[in-house]
Length: 309
Image (cartoon, rainbow, N blue to C red; front, side):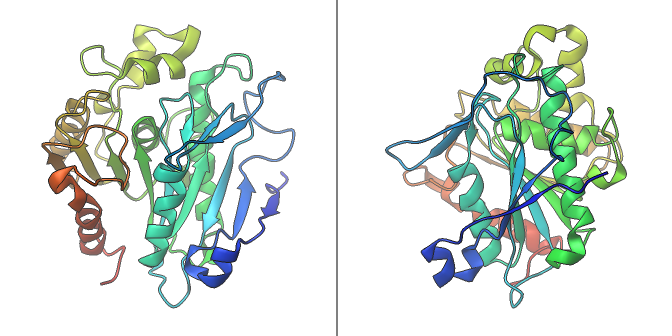
């Protein structure tokens, strides 16, 4: 089997002046011509940056991971694969992706931003399978190249926001399911920020559910992708953040996942905030105590041995 192609990126002037923020390379998840579930189509990838500086990517059919390797003098050996949100319709690739990669690098943790394929029946077979396939493959590639990047293969986690949180939770609960299942696809921990967890009607984010499942939506698949129902005693520990006034993805998503982990005696830490809404990333100005959530995450990472003070 051919190894995925490595595509070296051009370092920006900012990266040259601040090595800890350098994106070192972008890696195709799959060898050319070997992308699973691929269908030839006219779907094209597009990137748009809005007035707030938020990068949104749509039409993803060629999945990659962008590697941000922690500087050697800071590196703890830990790594995180980041899954941006966007309702399985777009990827919010900056404020739920690269911005956090830089945050992790500054704290000695290598980060990999996953550009996963967005479900589209025109461009892929069985579209609901595709994001998880890409997440599994991303985790495998990080683990298989751990020594190259100075990473401890037993300290690789997954982080996700909103629908990306659903993907991260799905990877955490389904890493041993499906055609691409492998022990190398299992994350050691998960960080879930205002995540979509459930596809059950009462608390689901309907857009994420419908975009992922598409025309194959069924009661069986709704249950399969309701991750609070799929937690086992092998599910990795989790850190969760949610605002109680989130009208996009109800807070019950995080609560139900936390309770499912608790029922299996899986270590979990959940931070609920009275105010914050949805989709904030680290942009928490005017959102009260929610501004403290990144430091709460840092404390959790430190206590788990993934970060140094």
